[in-house]
Length: 474
Ligand SMILES: Nc1nc2c(ncn2[C@@H]2O[C@H](COP(=O)(O)OP(=O)(O)OP(=O)(O)O)[C@@H](O)[C@H]2O)c(=O)[nH]1
Ligand SMILES: [Mg+2]
Image 1: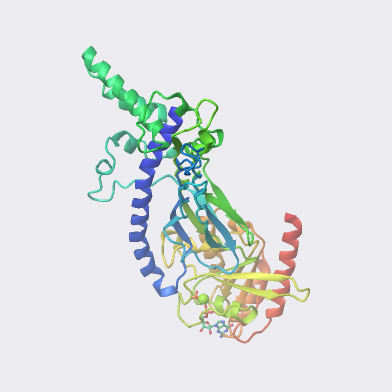
Image 2: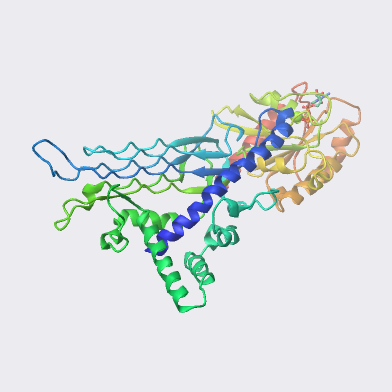
């Protein structure tokens, strides 16, 4: 049991410092991200966050005292539990921009006399867009930060630093023994002193879970110190053995408690027994869970529009849905994804995602790179928007397909169509189309998004494809 307690405190002591450093580091990163996304509004689709449940309040040591009752029964209240950090998927959110880099829930307050229990800490509710994927990551390492020395924060933290890369890698037994063994001196007397010191430290660690009445001296030999309540031990065990978390917030209203609040300590009535009717001990509250997570927003739309820059993707989505991204005659007008919705004749909804343009070599970070493809990765249908007025328009499709395959092999296997846009623009548009349909392996629909020509045909085709893919997946 002492091992569990020791490991908890070692891990949590260190993680607390990691937690603050992590948040500090993210502040630096966010400034950089902010300037990048400054041009395209407040859109952020990736965040790393440190999450901390509130600590539990301590139990109280107190006795009923009245004029006629000089030695009354114990009446110290229990500490309030810490609040939890709860993530909720919200369809009204569209970006991770407002998620802070460090999220903590409120701590519980301590218990008071007259059986007054502490107040439970408030839960912290964090709203994330539907389509957010949450993954737990290892606590970060800060060796790259100049001048940061973990040892200056915790005395004797060398072993912890070595084991800090992954919580699950930390073995409490190993850690403790290596600390003790490394200090074993040579002479018998010194060895005995070291053993006594190690025992005393262990006893104090156990004792640190307790809240003693101030005038009482801590006696590490007390056997009642070992009788910790089951639920308290279960929580300590949970803290040191928490399983890594992954979650996909794919429906509106879905919620997940990411960091539980700490256990509130019991007041002294909990320790009253037939042999000890005036217990002078209570339990301290326990720290809340701590996790380091990454959030990645992968939009969930039925149809993903993919195309080179300036081919008319935004013009198309503006013409058929309620979304109105900026349209202009230069490349990279759109810098963030936009989601538009069409209500079909049967009142079903079809969502379409418009993303920034992709250029040849985007997988080598040309243009805006390929990271925006995460927003069409989960679409069941792909619609390639092609500028039909340019010579050999099919080469645009080849470029797009090869870039999509670079991003995620097999992505182009989804049901697809070509929206051959700007069919009104040049005389070559018609012959281009007639040549292409002869060998194309996917349907091509010539349209003019600007003049709203032939758009109903596109909507019907997309609606049918969506219906078939929904049927085959159910
Ligand atoms: N003639 C004609 N022009 C079009 C058509 N569709 C779009 N355009 C024009 O093409 C230009 C680019 O349109 P956008 O919708 O901004 O293109 P985009 O693909 O979203 O561009 P990026 O966001 O930069 O990737 C604008 O000047 C539009 O008016 C069309 O069907 N016919
Ligand atoms: Mg655009």
